[in-house]
Length: 177
Image (cartoon, rainbow, N blue to C red; front, side, top):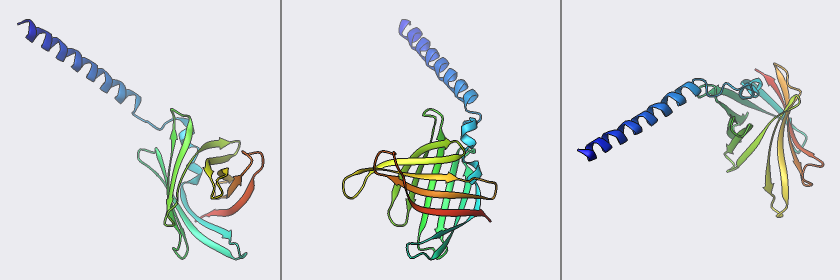
């Protein structure tokens, strides 16, 4: 009889703990991405025309469709050049535990890039450290700047001196479609 009593008591404790965790989880996750920082990338949501100049100084064009989904927690990017020769996707999410934005990019050239960052003044800055082909540590970053409702500038930059100086490698001008 004592074994049955102990088993019943253990079962009641397990149920009480499980119920407590479930209630706490439900109360704290009604809107899991409601922190103000989770809206910092909202300027990017929409359909965009992208324009840049290639290495031969010829204008190039692309489209970037940005959506927000998964309970407004995830920003999804769908980029392609006009001729569809280059296609890329990214997922971005504000991580409230780390208090940073995190982004993963993949494309049809086989690239996988991971970034972290957030707002820096009026610009969104996402960066990563990587070892280049020569074995040297560099920082790569994307800077979304000059942000308005219908346009912004995107700069791809790199630094080989730990961020003391930056080189612009690519600039894309975005206008809302």
